[in-house]
Every structure is written in C-alpha cells, then in structure tokens.
Length: 265
Image (cartoon, rainbow, N blue to C red; front, top):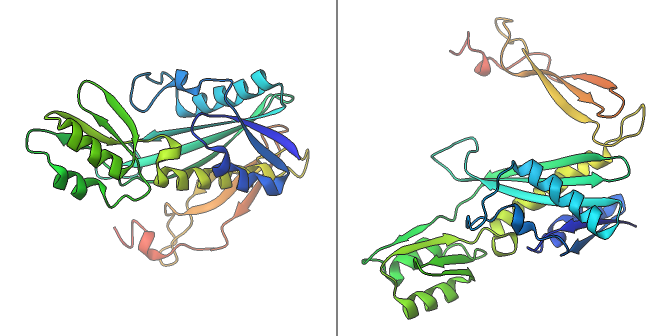
C-alpha cells in the first residue's frame, strides 16, 4: 500500500484511514510538524490563513519532513454555515497532496455543531453545568477560570474541577480538538469520504484524479409555465490537469413548480 502521512497532534488518522484504505493508501501519523503553529481553537495561536491553506501547509510539511510522496492535512472551522447566528456550524477540509505532481485535492464536509459555551458568574453551579454539558456524551471541555486553561476535561472531570476551583468568573467551552469532540469526528469522517470519492474519480482522458462535478448550471424549466428556475439544469465535471470536461444533464427534464418563482412566488 502507498503511505499517506498526516501531520496531526489530534489523532485524526483513524478517522480518515477507513475511507482511503480501499484506494490503497495506508494513513500514518507524523508528529514532526507542530500543527498548533498554524492556529489553535483556544486562540492561544491565531490562524492567519484560510482553513484550506492551513490544510495544504500541513500536507506539504508531512511530505517535506518525512520524505513521503503523499501527505494529508486536516483543518476545521466553526461558525458561518447555512444558518449564521442561528446554528453553530463545523466545516472540515482534508487536503491530499502529491509532492511528485504538486497537485492538491480537497475533501469537504460540514454539519451543525451542538455543544456550546457556558459563561461562569457568581450564580453558576454544578446544576448549571449539568444542564449545559451532560447530554454531550462524546464531548470534552475546557474550563477557563481567567487564570488558567484546563483542557481536555471529560464531563466528570469538568464537574470535579469546578467543585475544586469554585470559580466566580470565566467560561466553559467545548474542546474542539478532534480527539475530544465526537461531533467533529463524525464530520471529519464525512470529509474523508468526500476526499476518497475525488481520488477515485479519474479523468477519462488523462486518468488524473478529482474528475468530479465542479460547475452547476441552473435554469431547469418549470413543469407548468416553462420558465427557468433556480434548480440545477446540468453539472460539468472538469479535469484540473488536462482541462477535459463533461456536461451531464439533470435526470429530471423539468422542475417541480414548487421551486418556480413565477408559479410559487
């Protein structure tokens, strides 16, 4: 099997490996690159680049420092999403980098993220923590008492530490590092599946990977009035290497009138 090295401190290899194994890749971890230098969720180090750029740097460093051909980098971002301000959103990107071809391919996935923060004040007690945190069984926590950050706390550990320190100010936040967040792990797995799909999709002309739909053409005609809608009319698969493209029409020849701005404004 071809080795794919992931630069991570947060135990992401087991989350990504199952998706890439059928393609012949053995995902292994390197700790030679300190990924925290690119940013930390606690803002002890702020990320000054996009998530995709950070993932690429990690993958490139994995190759550079180990001498392997294929590197992987993973990065997550929180906030935004389809319902900004109403729902927290986790967006994950995984980069596959081949140093021989200098080609990077990205897998993406996103989803809602439920655990939230709890501000500590003089009225905060154990019952407050139970109400806010106990239902998230696969989530660990960070307690910031304004003096020290206590990271990687299980729910039981969080409660015990709160009783011991009895802080009157500070904040309790989800520990967003991958090995401490079950919801984030699920989305990383989905991003790995998307990456595997892209690696397996070969261009019929040059056999390079990532021959997937990259352009959407809207304008599928309404079934009742024949006016164009915002529904997808066709998709275009593009090859990043040779430029070959293939247009595939929507299997549906007309759009449901429900989506027509004229029939259903």
